[in-house]
Image (cartoon, rainbow, N blue to C red; front, side):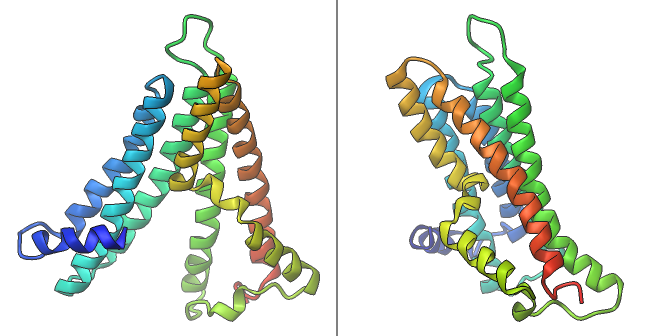
Length: 227
C-alpha cells in the first residue's frame, strides 16, 4: 500500500485534513467490512476485501501525513489502536453472520454467529494482552519493554514460539488476512453450492483465535516482559 499511499499523500498534505480525521475514516472503512460481508455470494466477500484494503491504505496515509507535518499525538496513537481492534473484530463478526445465512430462505443458524463473535473476541484479547504489558509496566513505574524481553526464558517455549511465528497461522485472524481468506471460502462455496466452506472457515478461525489467545498469554508470562 505504500506505493499507493505516497501518491495520495501529495494531494492531502497541504489540505486542512488532519491525521486524526484520516484515522476516523480508516476505522469507519474497517468497521464497514462487517455489513459488507452480509451481502450474499462472492460480491459480499469482495466488498469486505475492499473495505479492509481501504482501511489498510488509510492506515498508511494517516501516519505518513502525521510524520510529514510532525503532528504527533497520543490521541492519534490511541485512535489507531482502536481502529485495529474494531477492524479485526468487524471482519470476524461479519464472517460469523455470513455463515449464519441471515438472508437465506431457511432457519438462521446462530451457532456460526456465535463462533464468529468468539473469533473476534480472541483477536481482540490477543491485542489486549500485548497492550496490557505496557500498561502494567507503566503502572509499576518500569520503562517500556525491550525487544529482547519478548524471548521466553524457557528454551522449549522459545522453540515453540519460533515455530508458531514461522507457520504464521495466527495472522489468519487479523482483519486484512481474514478478509482475503473469506473470498477464497466464498469461491469454494459458489462451486459447492452452499455455505459449507464459509462455516468450516468460521469454526477454524474461532479455534485459532482461542488457541492463540491462550498461547500468547503463556508466551508473555514465560518471557521477561513483566519483569
